[in-house]
Structure formats: structure tokens, C-alpha cells
Length: 251
Ligand SMILES: [Zn+2]
Image (tube, rainbow, N blue to C red; front, side, top):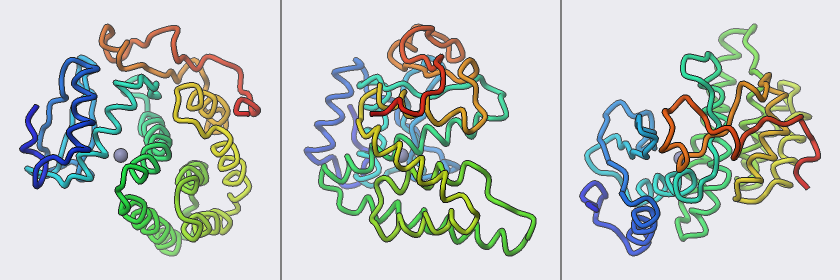
């Protein structure tokens, strides 16, 4: 595989992760530059359900490369199901965001455990900015109120952030009387602490009904299996979320 997209060459850690991906999948994801990429890097799914790494600039820092590889490993190597909803559904952005927030609650602590001490402060900075932006919007438009996604997103973030920042996230929810939902979701996330597929399915099974999703509409898709399917046809069995809501799913 080529590493010329990574600033100052690959470290041993990067090479190990890249080899793991290539060995498991038989290919290393295509790396593409897109100046409109909303972050420094992102992982996308091509039409054949293969992973693709998209970076904003011609090269990206080592920590970004590692982060994107960890996303690839979760979905394609470890076969953790990703939430999916059909293209064109107006709730697609919400489903993608819920999945992404959940994934970060696993990946960021993992990245820190691999020696990237800066990863938590980098993400914390972004989140604090989000609170400030929300407050500014509410000041500008007094009718504006955060929606029910706010306590979900903030609780997922609070599950891995430092206590100071987690407290600020809770306080932001309290201001909009959403702190009880925040507390419930954080407790649930802490009980579903595992990085395995079942923990994720249990968590989603418990929380998605609170966000207006029915199980027949939201399915988990498995990328490795997904290779055999077009993007919108989901495997019927493995990882499916066709279950009754169950708050005690995570023990
Ligand atoms: Zn990420």
C-alpha cells in the first residue's frame, strides 16, 4: 500500500493497522482527496460497499490517518454493524450522526490507549464550540430550542470526555431541561461499555425508539457481508435491529 498521503511517513503503529486492514479485506481502501470534505478526514462507502478514505488536503497528519483506519477496522474488519436507512429518507442525517457519535465513543478512548494523548482534547475543543454555537443561536432566535438529539449526542460524548467537559455537556442539557434524558442515556452507554457488535445493537435497540425510529425502518448493515449486496439491500439476519424496545438490554 502507498503511504504518500500521510504526513512524515507511516509510524510502526500506522503500518500495523494498515497491514491488518489489508490482510483482512484483501485490499487497502482507496484514498482520495476532496477539498470539500467536512473534516480533515472521513471514511466513505463506495457503491460496492468497500471502504474509501477521503482526506481534505493532499496529505493528512498521522493521527488523522490512524483515526480513519480505526473507523475502517470497526466496520469492515471487526464487522460491527452500521446503522442504515434508505437513501432519500429525511432522517438519514440523524441516523448517520447517531452512528458516528456512538463510534467515536469507542474509537477515541481506543486511540488514546494507543498513545495519541492529544485525541481527547482535540475532540473536546470541537464539542465545547458546539455548545457555544447553540447558545448563540438561542440568543439570536428565542423560539429556537435544541431537539431531542442533543442529550443523546452529548451523553455519548460525555461517556469518554474528561469530567470537566462532561459536566459542561450535562449543564448545557440542564439549561434546556433535557438533563434527565442525558442521564438515562449516559447510564445506558456506561452499561453497554463493550466494543463488540452486541453492545452496539443493545444500546441502539434501547435508545432508537426514543428518537422516533421504528425497527423495521432502521437496519444495521454489515459491511463485510454488504460486499454481496447493493448498498440499499440489507442482510436480513445478522445485526438486524428488528426487536422490541428493551431498556434493560444492557446489563
Ligand atoms: Zn471519526
